Amino acid sequence: AQSVSQHNHHVILSEAASLELGCNYSYGGTVNLFWYVQYPGQHLQLLLKYFSGDPLVKGIKGFEAEFIKSKFSFNLRKPSVQWSDTAEYFCAVNVMDAGNMLTFGGGTRLMVKP
Amino acid sequence: GAGVSQSPSNKVTEKGKDVELRCDPISGHTALYWYRQSLGQGLEFLIYFQGNSAPDKSGLPSDRFSAERTGGSVSTLTIQRTQQEDSAVYLCASSFRGGGYEQYFGPGTRLTVT
Image 1: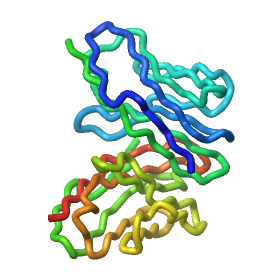
Image 2: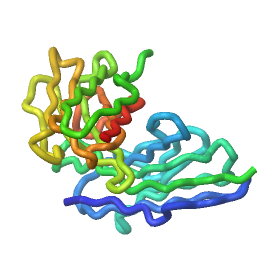
Image 3: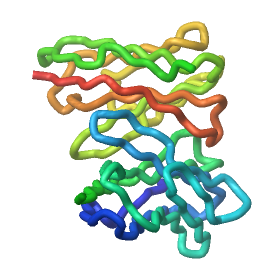
Image 4: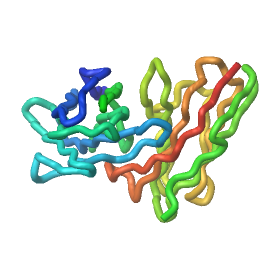
């Protein structure tokens, strides 16, 4: 079965620092890739997605992610974080020939100190 | 427009009781998913409905869990003879179609089994 790994469980940054959250998946076939964010007390929201084409995708709020097929990775980046980015971030994968569900990573809790 | 709604937002029940959780997907979305978010297990897929097709039940953890979707819209997740390990946040999501289309999540139902 496919799996998704997020290596950083907790990240603490100061405002204006750069962010990179790692995501690796185990399946070698065709995948759709997603990053979701859950702000405190709110529900999961889509940050960005990759289906095909340009491996560098841009999402909302200045986030971007790069799909590197050879590394089975889809890392999330933001050049300069803000206090309002404090949230939990989830990487998710849909394996196109193995069902329609999302397989989620364990999540990364980001705290941005003002 | 209206997002995915779920009810109740919180449910406390005694061990051994049955519970029903409700999900109203986004209008026009043919695919509906149930996930569970718990401290120990992260976000797990439970069941998927697509139109009038047979549901994908591959994520249901035991035969105490069942779900139905009436008229291709509202869905109910039923847990019979609840156990303490069933305590979690139950999330519903919908998408325009299955097959990797982005999923929109509801706010969840927090179930506590005492």
